[in-house]
Image (cartoon, rainbow, N blue to C red; front, side, top):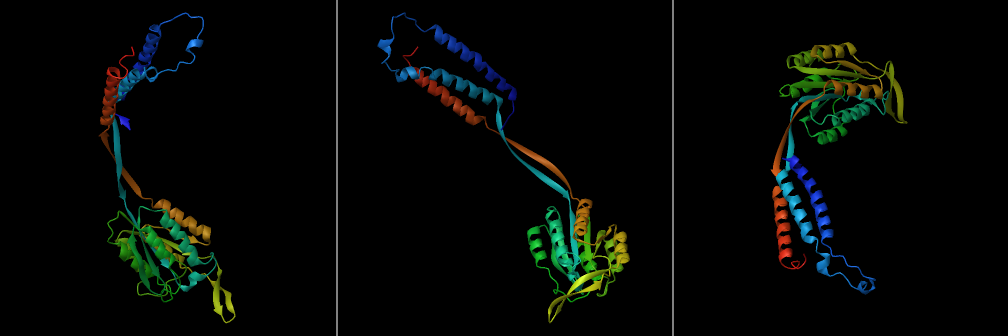
Length: 327
């Protein structure tokens, strides 16, 4: 609660000298008698009228206080804010080919990527985010949405084997660009993560990058995998066995895609580096929000005016009836 005329509240200080004057006046009108002993009055109890003799004055002070508050015009406010954001639409294009099961990242590349991307999504509540999956082919797992809870649920269900094996980087990028090109957002971004070289699909990665460039889509590319060899689980009649496979990431191609579209290329060799990369992208692509605040004030003096009237009427009634004989 606030007051339209707060300076009127200073009038409440007048109550202090009024109370002081009342106390002095009351003592001045008391009758003094000299007697040898008070024992005769020890058994006498004060009547209700005697106990209430100051009530009219108290009610008068309450009335004055409430009227001063009315003059100060108390107000309540209903405030809200209207946010206008410079929207950023983001499509995550994720490689789910067989090599993403390599365990140079823990527990493997695919699970590490899923965990970090879900953290990234949770940290961007103002953006529309979509998900494209690719291996030997590509499809849209989730269109652009602001319902991040539903998106994360879909992300959690992503696993190897949902698509024919292979690495169709060009197709994965083209699919992501196709889903975001008609967006009305001021900033359109694709984050493409892969651990290999393009070996499938009908669209070359550079062709997809040229399409992204023409559509004003910025592409961040991430090559995930350690240097050299990586442990890969192989199912055998004797259980899961591990064999080392070469890490074959077409970094020049991923760098070209990023440079052509105004993005950046990153290399993630472990979990910490992958999380660091997404944090860096998060900082580079922060949503700008302009907030306009509205404040509607409602007058609240009526209640105080009613209470002042009730207090005044009660004082008058008491003075004219029950307490009329008390000077």
